[in-house]
Length: 135
Image 1 (cartoon, rainbow, N blue to C red):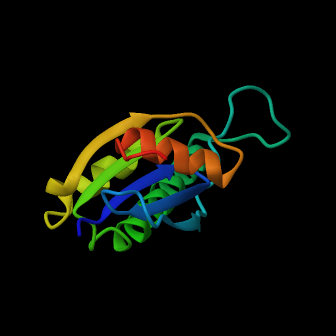
Image 2: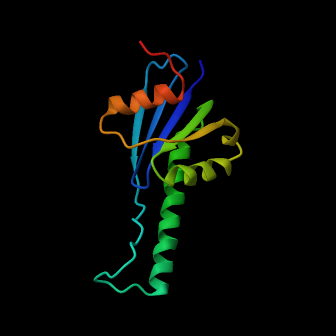
């Protein structure tokens, strides 16, 4: 049976939801990231030089690439992949997936979706985006 994967991602965590065309069972794997937050503009207690800013962005890019690669290791057995999330991280993951020839054709779509509070909300989002049957 076809394995579907939906990945909800932001820069701090990702949820990989795997299921089949019937939507049952749904297996959820949560991954945390080490991606540091963006520096906000304005006056801070620490003066950031251009060098510090560049070092921070380089570290952020490196950690984001590492996080995306970790997610991708969970997607190789999937036949269809959907990436979703509230911010920019979903596009970073999309770009990483497109760089992996073995799974790039499996990427079906990228969707903007909100945060969720409960696992049941995540499951409902996945059912809607994947057009899975609902009881």
